[in-house]
Image (tube, rainbow, N blue to C red; front, side, top):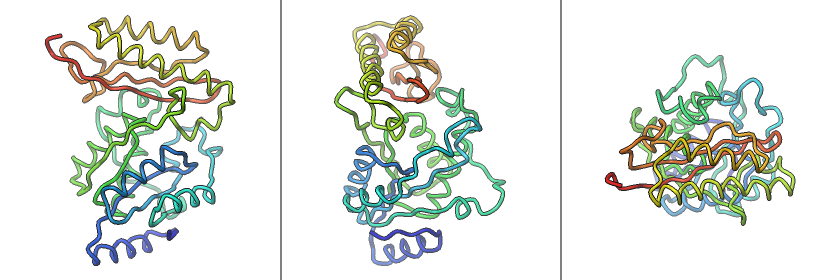
Length: 284
């Protein structure tokens, strides 16, 4: 695996692959990798001849009181994992490389960023969309893989790629989970072993709500209230728990047929997110 740090080097390598008739897959990350990230590399390898991963802790998607300075930087161990997963190129730029001057151009996807995490993290998805658009323009991939754990992020990136005519196919990859259902996340490293066991209540709650809706329950506010109370009793401080339209991310209402049940909740100081999707017949 090659490790490159500049845009010019990455562009030259990708150009060489293109001239050889090879396709390129891309997995953007912020590092501190776990099995979920590696599953994205494996999926990218299924669809492309060469795979590029990026590791960049993007400052523009962190709010003033969030954990940018303390976010784990583990480049050496991340590199070992990527190499073992047969990643072909690691792009690990500096902040100055990605933002060489004061950033005056932003990519902001209307509406989709107003709900769920966007409601309490103003500017977060503008930072995500901006850096992903930069990375797409650098790597010029044929396909790019993103985890389904962050449903809102995936929806926004899909829309951005569509609206801006990026010639890249966005592939969503199923969430990797611990034995108790906890979604794998870089922030799980902040949890104690006891908290990791507690955190299984998130998946249990989402699964119970999905089952209730599948069985015909349609009082969504009441279901949200029940789920919120369950998580609070399990020791969480709930940022949001929503049953939303999977296309617009607005609160679900009949006759919506594609739903996402999404949650963000804190256990101690650690903020965890997860979701589950389902489809219901319009006549139910």
